[in-house]
Image 1: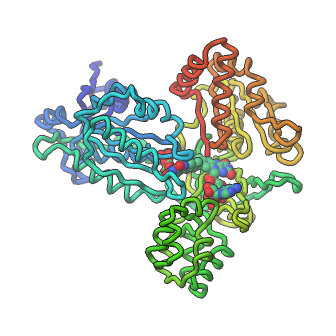
Image 2: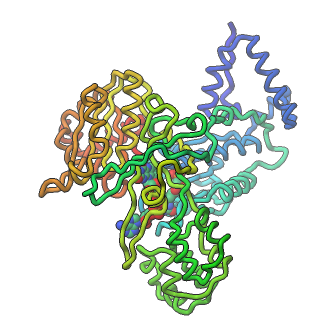
Image 3: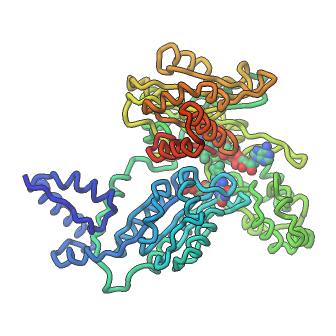
Length: 587
Ligand SMILES: Cc1cc2nc3c(=O)[nH]c(=O)nc-3n(C[C@H](O)[C@H](O)[C@H](O)COP(=O)(O)OP(=O)(O)OC[C@H]3O[C@@H](n4cnc5c(N)ncnc54)[C@H](O)[C@@H]3O)c2cc1C
Ligand SMILES: Cc1cc2nc3c(=O)[nH]c(=O)nc-3n(C[C@H](O)[C@H](O)[C@H](O)COP(=O)(O)O)c2cc1C
């Protein structure tokens, strides 16, 4: 049999060429002829007219290179990078999509055209997997980027003080290194789809080679066909079970939710999340409408309940309020520079109540953005629960500036959702938080609080698959008696062997607070031995303190057990990360 190999200059990324070579390269002549005929047929039916001709094959070689670099935590930037690559191919580019996590900085000066799509996380930080390359790019050792043409698309959430901070810093830095900005940065809020698509279109056109100099690319979109999973949404689900897992004497409420669907559950795998499309608290909406002098408007009430973000208060909202109302005191608050501090812990209701003025429905709507869904780690495996999805949701309740506050989505679930109710949901896949390919590989899971949710899914999946790899769970919460989430299930799992080990840390049971990272340190010898034996390490839950502490504890543990310097230990952890053996899903 003769083998066919696609040339390196083919208008695909290296990864795609490899995939194609694997499939087409070993195909029989009959299979190749069928494929050629099939693709030609598809193109003529779809009317692009882009059927390969020998002279076009020449032009393909001249396709313009384009590097699309993305920094993501929850997948939005990665999805947009894929969209950009698809659009770029149609414009005669040969796109190469690169994850910041895999970026070798020395390759960047060779990128003739560069698009960067970057999200901001933490409090203005890069996504965790992007941190290494991001820090290198910001350091004095970063290479010059003269001759590179670039544009940055920033993703963020205007509820955060450092809105799109990482995109802003990357935009400045890449220009400072000598690259030429060909498209102004756009900072996208949570409803990023439309502005992002417009920015991608505009930037690609600005980077595109002149007509005539352009290679003709045949737009067969293999990636899109692969992605065409049945995973569309949102879909409606019915609440089958609603159980508060904390005891009645706990200060917390953590709801175990079981959802069922009219047909099969949307496709998901352990590690994915489910987005819930919540409804706002009717009492809050009524108060807001009253404060704005709009209390009798039913249509507006329904719209505010179902589809507007009526709680977030950003600096931009205060500026818009001042512009719309010309309120003297709000203007003064902005001019004094105190507004940034004033909005901390406050919501839109505080602004409208403290600086009251009659607003029109349009003015009030103009102060809000679309209501965004919230993600929850899926806590079940289809192999064990069939067509259901289980979630674990902690109700957010706090008091600030004298007012009791309730999280929009967790409050919707905790306070108002009941058995038999219906709710709109959508699966959010996460390929960067997934079980090892081999069932023989050991896993270590660190998941305090609701961070334990995906690990219930991991353990269910591996039990159903009869996995030989061992599962070790570190769990923590406040109190053994009141907050031990899924206690009986873990005890059963320890009995049937689907959990090989479990270590627990209850912070309020002893005078000295004990956290999962303390347990990790105590068990450091075994943890390092498991890792050296090929184990994968997973962290889920709180991003602000826990995830950082766990990472630094693991680094110290490695240095201590192996007797190496902190620098060598840090390198070992980076290596684990690059091998996708250290994965985290934190929020
Ligand atoms: C990938 C992913 C997976 C997740 N998985 C889970 C999960 O399995 N279980 C789970 O419970 N959550 C999970 N979350 C978090 C979840 O998505 C929501 O962020 C959380 O439920 C809060 O949403 P909410 O609408 O109830 O609160 P919101 O209305 O969004 O309010 C939250 C905001 O309130 C403010 N706030 C909160 N507490 C205080 C305080 N004490 N003082 C002052 N201000 C405060 C903060 O500004 C905070 O951002 C996950 C998040 C992500 C990104
Ligand atoms: C825990 C957490 C922290 C975040 N911190 C910020 C922030 O400091 N600034 C900002 O603009 N956006 C912030 N965001 C919003 C994300 O940038 C936004 O959701 C983005 O679409 C995520 O893109 P990704 O899926 O590519 O990671 C944060 C989101 C979460 C869940």
